[in-house]
Image (cartoon, rainbow, N blue to C red):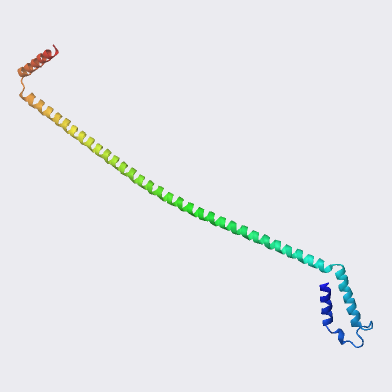
Length: 186
């Protein structure tokens, strides 16, 4: 009802109808006839509840927009939650990669230290092997020199004995050796 009164006041306030000649409330006045038709049209719209239908449609549209806004807000919150989750995961992955790099550096340092120790042991073993080879070569050289000296001494002694020895002296030496062997065997 308030809507009808507001429409009537708006129509009457628009005073072009008052500019017509002759009596206003007459069927020969086209402005009056248009006014009546317009009021009837408005009455039919009100009777058919078009304003409430339009209001309902607008309310539905407002509810749809509100639902879309709520859904958009929920999606935004979900996106922010996902973003925070991904940022946390990225931070965790960065920390994990830093730990892996630090662990790898520590293992590399340990491996380098172990390789250094192994190299020192290997060098010490090779030095010891070289010293053993030198000592063996030295002992072999000393033995070869002794053997050579003995051979030379025997050859010289043979020559000396051969020059100084007579047959009777040789026979007496042989007899002495035989008696010495007999004494040792019995």
